[in-house]
Every structure is written in structure tokens, then in C-alpha cells.
Image (cartoon, rainbow, N blue to C red; front, side, top):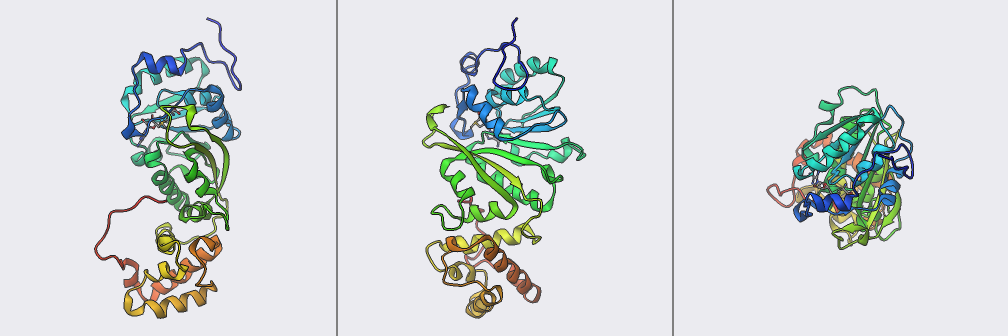
Length: 329
Ligand code: SAM
């Protein structure tokens, strides 16, 4: 059968469209898995193009391939290995079909039916000889949690980030994408902006209108490329920085000292907060969203120094007994 020449990269043998496959395999989107499928080949190609150059020796890990729209666009770029991590086994038929189709392309395609939040990439990619690209039209429900997990990996240089050239090209709800990339002074500046910009350089590539997805989500979607910084802005442990930034932003409309002060028990709160803001040379009456990344990091550094003489403060929780972790927003 005649092969179709597609936008970029190699030809794939003729395949039913994603829309036809979804119908054929009766793949009704499941809300609890945040399933919104992209059917438009130009858009899936554009997402993969945003990832930049994919060399023939590279590995691409796609999160949540679903029926395989983005997967096809990745296959056409012919990495050496394509790893798919999908939680929903109903996609076995469509993904297996793609695997058959990719056979002549001389690449390795591995499908893992697992939760990406538990996926241990070091187990499947034991060495660091190949560059890894992380690509995915992420399920909204876990996108920020996954991103924060990956920042922790960047900070610790583990998992997909043992090499310093692993890039992420991911989709988020438009507002979340804007928050990730928001500069100082922007209305969207938030905790997620600071956390993102400490370890990566995020770039908002383009917006996909909600109507391009089936089913249509309530919001538009932003495609963000995140490039881990070769020189991270801090060597402090991830958990400590995360804790300090979370406290600073816990009272968004108040002076930044208010949230920060809740890191300390009441008997030392005022005095320690005053002392540490002075040491960090940060104006304590700025609002959290008026702080630069460098100022947040200085506040984290003086906090880390303070812990050396007051280690008991590290586990202090002003809300009392431990609360379940909250999603970043
Ligand atoms: N890539 C497809 C596309 O663009 O049309 C589907 C994207 S859909 C927004 C998200 C996909 O992630 C779904 O296929 C869903 O089953 C999968 N998914 C949801 N939660 C997951 C998890 N924890 N681990 C791996 N995949 C997950």
C-alpha cells in the first residue's frame, strides 16, 4: 500500500485516523483519567516539533499516549527508542497497531501500562548514554504533581535527569502554563512560577484551543517546553526549597513575611522572621508575587542556616498534625 508522506520526518504506512480508531475500539474518554484526545495531526506534529531536534540516537518517553496521535508524530521523527507510559490498558489495540506499523522503522518501541507517577525510568534506562525527551499531552489531574516530582529529580540529578540535557515538552491547562512561565510583575506569578524557574527555563510555545480536543475540555491548553538549567540556581535540597516557597505563597495577598513567619513556632516567630529577612536582604513588606526567584532563594538559604542551630524547626507545622499534601497552584 502507498505510504503517506507526512509533514515532517519519515513515512508511516497508511493507518486509520485517530478518530476512526477511537470509534472502532469504542474508546470513550474516561473523565477520571483526564482523557482529552487530540485528533489533528498538524497539532500533534507541532507539539513534537516544539521539543526541538530529536537525534536518531535519542530516547523519547511519551506520557499518556492514549489512542496514539502524538505517538505517530514522534514515530515520524524516528528516535532510537520510544517509551510509552499509559495507565489505561484499553489502548492496547491502538498502540499495538502502531508498534506493528513502526516495525520497518528500525526503532525500539516499549509500551508500559503503568502510572507515570510511579514509573521508575532508571530501571528501564539503566545507563545515561542516550539523551531523553519527555513529551506528553498530560492528564490535567496529575500534571502539576508530575512536574513537581520531575523538578525534585532535576534537583537530585536522578531518574530522567541524570543527564543535564533532558527536556520536557508538555501540555497544561492554559492558566497553569501561564503560571509556570510567569515573570516577576506578571499577574500569574505564583508558587509554580518560582519552583519552575529555579530548576528550569520554561517557554510557553503555543496555545491549543479547547475545541481541538475530544471531548472538549473547559479550558484552552498551553504547550510548555521546560529546559533544565545547566547551572541550577541553588544547590539546596529540593524539599527545603519547596517548603520555604510554599510557606511564602501561603498568604498570597499579605506581606511575604506573614507566610514565611509560619515556618517558625510562635515563641520565636517575630524575632526570627525579622532577623532572617534582614540577613537575606529582602523587603518583608513585598507581596509574595513581587519576589524574584533570587529573593526566594535567599530566604531559603537563611532558613537552611537557621536550621543548623535550630534543627527542631525543620519539622514544625503551624497547622498542627500533618495534613495531606496539596496540589500546587
Ligand atoms: N496523548 C493522547 C492525545 O493527545 O490524544 C491522550 C492525552 S489524554 C489528555 C491523557 C492520557 O494520559 C490518557 O491516555 C490517560 O489514560 C493517560 N493517563 C492518565 N493518568 C495517567 C497516569 N497516572 N499515568 C500514565 N498515563 C495516564
